[in-house]
Length: 489
Image (cartoon, rainbow, N blue to C red; front, side, top):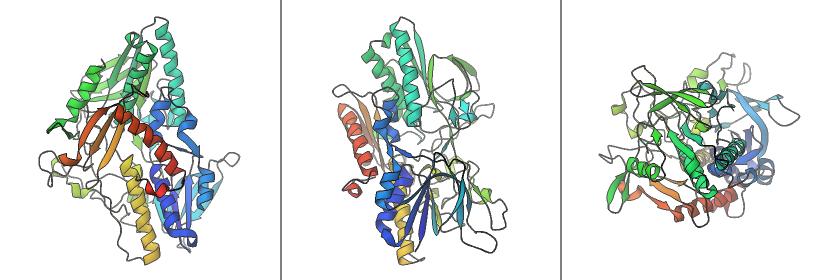
């Protein structure tokens, strides 16, 4: 009997674990180690953050789902990986620390035959002074990164709306809280949902809403922007995004590294080296992401973390990590199998794998401050990679160690994104975008790097309904309801 251990129960880890158990059956074990007792459909947190959904709408308990599936569930955080085992016992294992109520801090070891790192990111609020403390949101800003954060964000937003109704003008600032952030999409959705709700509440004229981002141009989104097919011609995401902000009366500050946050004020540095301040009454700033801090040890107990993890804390996989100038990187540098090169029984998926390089052009201010988005690995690609890794491991178990691995390169993968711009049955809007491939391939698609036949975008009520349907469909899938495997990632 083989044991597959999955560290992390988010979109990618949950996908990997549930498919692995389905394909392996009861002859083999699947263990999920995740510190959270609830599964969260993160894309809908932005609706919780404006009061259009509750926390209960976007989460559900993991324990009964895993019990039904026959998956061994441990509510704990993974602390370290021991891929060589101990001296005298070469069985690889991980150490975990319980987060379950009444068992907090209790440590244990779990041996494995195959290990999947799907731990996702650490929300690195501590990277920007005043943004938060460690991985926790602070008192100066709010966040929509977790369901609880989103509940808090809505509570604070409603206070702002009440002050506006009382005739007190309010300043709202939304965007990224550091020069190396990713996930601009969540902030993009949130600012437009705030604007939409302000109109519904009749307080839009009392709100100054502003965007701040590390993107060098609007519509970069950490993928270097894109051109999409619209009406027979190629329209840039920059034009698309700028029109959305302009139509809604939202000015922007871009190419910005938020260097410090105080109560009611952010300090920032721009790509040209200049510095400025922006006051606010309400701010939602996405923090930068980092690895969760897993350590790795050799059999003799020596620290080997830097051998299997990149400096940012994400796991090294089958990518080309050779340092090279931006104009020399290729689509082929990106991983295909997500297998660790040192230990063939360790894989990573979702945000947990280390990207080989930036997709957006690296930039820095004259002061040497890097200001550029880092590569997104969330959403549709995250689920696809999780399923692909599970399929590879199942084949290695069932067919033997020489079984070929399945591949899912982001440079050969398309993705669809539906970005909400306001939730309403008849007046809601969302931008529906497809991009192929996610990582541009300038050798295969000279000039734009992507295939315009599969890269397009539209905004309207239909997009909103698609996002609303996807919310229910993916929660249904995650609960392993009848026919769940038929719903694509």
